[in-house]
Image (cartoon, rainbow, N blue to C red):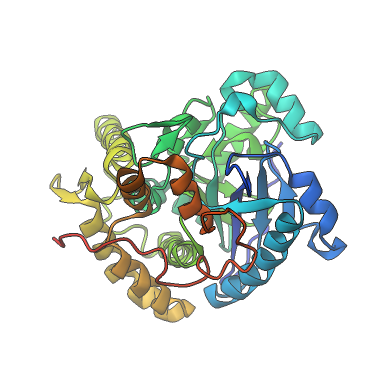
Amino acid sequence: MLENRFGGTSLPTVGVELELQLVDASTLALRQGVDAILAELPAELSSSVRREFHTCCVEVATDVHASVDDIRRDLKAKLLRVAGAAAQRGLLLAWGGTHPFSHWKDQEVTSEPRYRALADSYQDTLRRQLTFGLHVHVGVESGEAAVRASDQMRDHLPVLLALSANSPFWCGRATGLQSHRIEVAGSLPAGGIPPRLGDWDSYGKLVDELTACELIESPKDLWWDVRPSPSHGTVEVRICDMPLGLEAVLGLTALIECLVHFLAREKDREIGSDVGSDATGADQARLLILQQNRWLAARYGLDAMLIDRFTRRKAPARVLARELTDCLIHIGRELGCAEYLQNLKTRTRRANDAVTQIATYARTNNLEDVVRLMTRADSSGHRQPSLSPLLNQESLVGPLEASY
């Protein structure tokens, strides 16, 4: 049975996991290389730099920190080490939710026994999940708080997706979506929008029943857009594409941290709350609106006209994102991340990363140039490991768009 203990904390904590692409410095195609990179790194990074499902992906994880400032310092140091190790093997790190032209059929699964077992179980449904995301863990004090925040976070998932959308190309073609990653990931039976969990006991019963039916082995096999993480004592938000660069990561991390802290507080419950109106019809309408908003965010990004489930009004995702950052700025001041929230708000007035990719392709008609954008390599493909453009706040901000 799921243990009743939840490894929570009363102190604000946050952690981040980046799934980064490994591309050949000459061809800019995806290339297996995670094992070679791990062999170049010191032992003290073994718990932070890890394999993912495909050998062309490296995961860089932070330690548990008290602030987004600490996250920034942690990631800068680790990314420089990983990029240096990659350069020794003729590889570059690329930031994006999908690779523009490499095909999933050409990629190998890592040797990790768990991933091999999953590949054998899910076959091509999982092998085609050649996607790269940003996962943010926010520590909360109890399982009840984690379930409460996860339930209310569902309504904000489309805005987070619109902000992070960065996967418009897939296997050599334009998909027409700004986040094709989320469409690919949605094919897994235990993925996508989570059900309303209710409370910690109900969540535990759900996990126990799914485990007893042998549908999952542990809560880790629930690949929802947001989920409680009992072993870490966190709420884990998983909907975001990997954005173009560290500053976007930090802005999204700040927003998610503030939102989880707000929603986990029982006295606050949720922004615009109508708690108590979860009759069957209302709950079904809520889910259908959420599903439509999630698709619209994947299709149109920040220009998506999303439906506010409380007012039923439509508003651009970029406007809802600005309203959300304004609502949470007092939480940001408490947690010391208000500056990152303000930076993210500024980005809502510009093209998001997916539009920047699309504009690059429209200008050059060359998907290799899109990968160069994602790596910030020069035309010869041999410039990284300093990562200086990706660690610079303004380098990846797209052109100004009309504000609403």
